Length: 118
Image 1 (tube, one colour):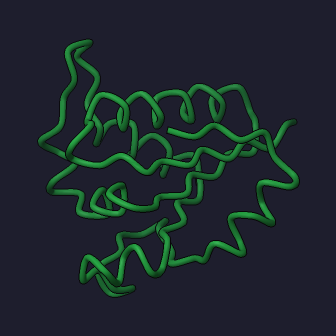
Image 2 (cartoon, one colour):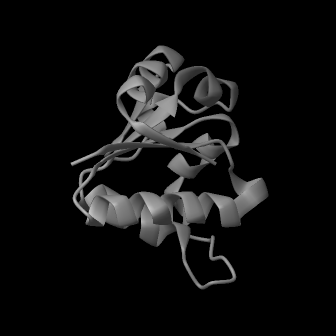
Image 3 (tube, one colour):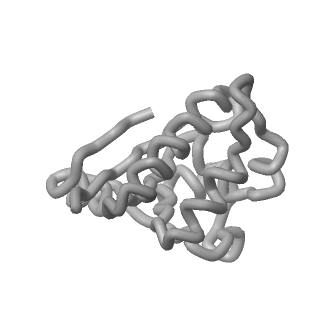
């Protein structure tokens, strides 16, 4: 089993890249790999699942479907603390399976994982 770290910095301004990143994370998780998703910059907006429910890309894939399937597989979603704070997102705003994290944790995880950045 390989560790994969998916780092997503794109949010509502690039929904196709956002969905694609989580789709690939889902593929890795479905193959039994250890997957973590780290949201930073504009991607922290995806903690708002109501917003994620409205995103469907030209291939027909929906963002919320990717998030829900990853959560059902216990994939951890880490959310950049300063990125969230700058967008007025606090720990109380996070859905189950999401947690606030830091750049230091991101770097430590990257040392031990194959990293995909979107």
